[in-house]
Image 1: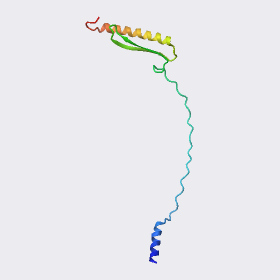
Image 2 (image 1 turned 180 degrees about the vertical axis):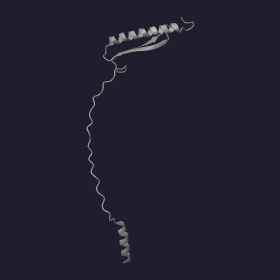
Image 3 (image 1 turned 30 degrees about the vertical axis):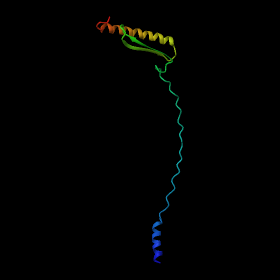
Length: 108
């Protein structure tokens, strides 16, 4: 009888009389449609232009002075050649003026 009483006490402590937990709520996931954005056109740069030229400019005694470049995204190579020639002439004039005002001794 004492054994039965001990078994009931131990068994009673293992049994819970609390209500069962509620079932978790069902979550429905909806996927929103993300609107497609049209790609933006790239800016016209040296790297993206189909027609491009570059030229190194030297001063009258042969020292590098700078570099000029011209490009066209329309692919107009004649316009690129004309613009490069204009920029090169302007920089050649700047290089000549610089060398005239900054002579190097012993070099003519």
